[in-house]
Structure formats: structure tokens, C-alpha cells
Image (tube, rainbow, N blue to C red):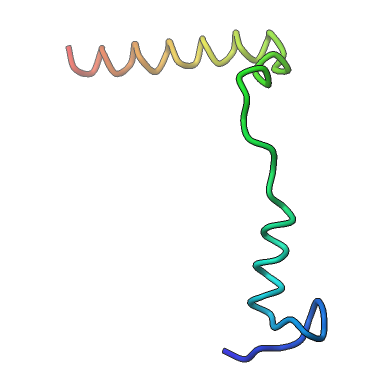
Length: 61
């Protein structure tokens, strides 16, 4: 694998990739973020979960 110069002349491709990954680091997940999800998505997700659970129970019965 060659070290080509991309981001900065003093950084090889591996170092540039690691620096870009650190820059992308997001904020940690917080339960308060769940309040931003619309109610219809909660209802749809609940229905889909219920269908999956019923299908699993029906298969094992």
C-alpha cells in the first residue's frame, strides 16, 4: 500500500483518514433525542414490531 499525499503534505493517506474520522465524530446519543421522532413513526414502528412478534409466536406454536 502506498502512502500518497492527499489532505496535507505532512500527512500520509492513513493519517489523513484517521484525522477525517475524528472530525466526523458525532455527539453521543441521548434519550431526549427520541422526542424528535414524529408520533406516526412511533406508531408505525410499534405495529411492525407487533407483527414480527406475532409471526414469531405463530411459527413456534
